[in-house]
Length: 363
Image 1 (cartoon, rainbow, N blue to C red):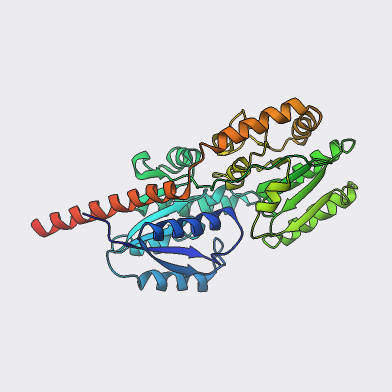
Image 2: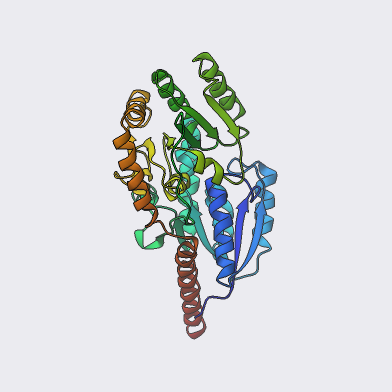
């Protein structure tokens, strides 16, 4: 059975939100449409992944309005807390879950919140026909910790575009960080590390929205003042087109405590930028040793040492630049991503058709 050229893509919040997860959704929609798959965008409340009763009621009604037997792709930012809705709809709709990273692994949650999110997401994922993840590391997590069968999971790596490589001629060298100001991204570790290398010449730009966790954002900005770094670290806020930021940078640095993939690392490599990051989540799968230096998570001293080495050893910086440029050639594009997702949708549609034929033959 050929895949019907349409899919219902359920996404919470504003699709144009400047995060990696939303960028993946936008690019996937574009690539699916190029492949002549009609995409019906179903927008849910921006309160996900912490919905109130009204948000859940609205989500329930929106899924109930989708036609019987439709293929439905649901973004994990919502699906992980939609276990009751999945229970209600999974026999009528053919649900494919898109998991960027498990919700329970977000930094800053209480033990009760972690447990609640783990339980709901495990139940919801079990009810999906298939699960799409953005990295092999996330696939392993879902298999080992959530009990999802490996054959039910497909890895669809985020795509990138071919870029002109950054010249990396900053004087002083510019360090670039691209990430929303949330606890999981570990900007606090970065700022502390930069305080350890005050004696070196550098500037740093931190690009990313500060509205997701205003209290944390204020803490980070106050920390730069306390450490007398506010004249060298610039918080640039959200920027739609990051090309100029990457082009003007010399090193990309982001010590996230966990990443389901980390699209910004791939973007940095596509510009030929050396990467300094934490050995966490899927980061080691994205950043090869030839292109970056990975340090233990939450270790400001190790991060400072890595940055010190790169900034004081031109030969190391040049070698990592060459490694990043070589890695850029192997990055998938968005058509590759869409092809993987289409294969999942095709398999779900074909399996559904087979089951319907069996039911008609043996009612």
